[in-house]
Amino acid sequence: MRIVTTLPSATEIVAALGLEPVGVSHECDYPRRAASAPAVTRSRIDADASASSAEIDRQVLDVAETEDGVYEIDVETLDDLEPDVIVTQGMCDVCAVDEAVVADAVDRISADPEVVPTDPHSVGDVFDDLERIGRAVGRKGRAAEVRRDLESRIDAIRERTTDIDAVDRPRVAIFDWTEPAMIAGHWTAELVDWAGGAYGLADVGERSRPREWDEIRAYDPELVVVAPCGFGLEQIARNTADLTERDGWDELTAVKESRVWAMDGDHYLNRPGPRLVDTLEALAPIVQPDRFDGPDPDVAVPFDDLAGLEPTAAGSETRPEADSSP
Image 1 (cartoon, rainbow, N blue to C red):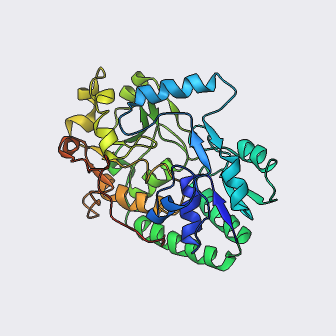
Image 2: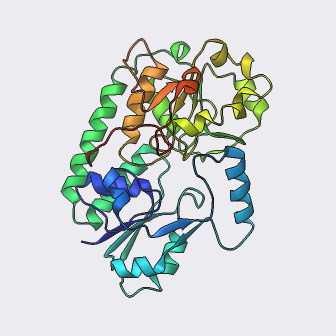
């Protein structure tokens, strides 16, 4: 079966099912071999590692005022790939090419693929998408097996945090963007709760959105995790002033108690695929360090340690090679 994916999380789901897409998005880089597949999407935004969060936000707003959209499909490449199934998304037209753009491209190619859209806003939604994609690509049994394994890993974390009283659960704020300041939504509240924290700025399923800084200061998080969408640790390091220069940053309890962390938002928090469970396993030792060891420094590091992060020749932090297992 010839599968095309138009966003990284879809590529990761297909890989977890033991398959390799014949075409991917320009952002697909996990498993690493996925990057060698032809890219069927392009971005009109310059979001490379040197771009600041404010610059990217301005570009997005400028493009939003046009009819072109943030992403486009390489229709010629898509036509050459002759896909049987295209996995896309309807969740966020800033994060990846959306279903409407894909539908327009499909109308212009010779093949007649099944288009499988995803629109997850909770961990359960992600697992439902996993099984729906599994059915579409002929891997129903494998999808159910992967889901059971992922749920078992979640249960292993929850068994160690369910007895934590409310008073011992730190108030957590996770930043999905830094300029403007946005609080992560969707599945984040679940992950924080399962990790042993309290997430008072967003409910499960609520979309990520900009927040007034005064609202965040009033919440006074006891733990902050900075994980901007699309940013690895190095790009977070280049944008720390977005937060540290704000009025009252130094007065936040999390800052005074040195409980501010940076997490690779690109590969973990912001991809609604199997590795959300890896995200939970990284969050748990950050939220409840007395109960868990870790986290993996390739996933998250203390905010103060960002200054010592050394770039690789490619301009991004070193990340270990990985296979297609969830």
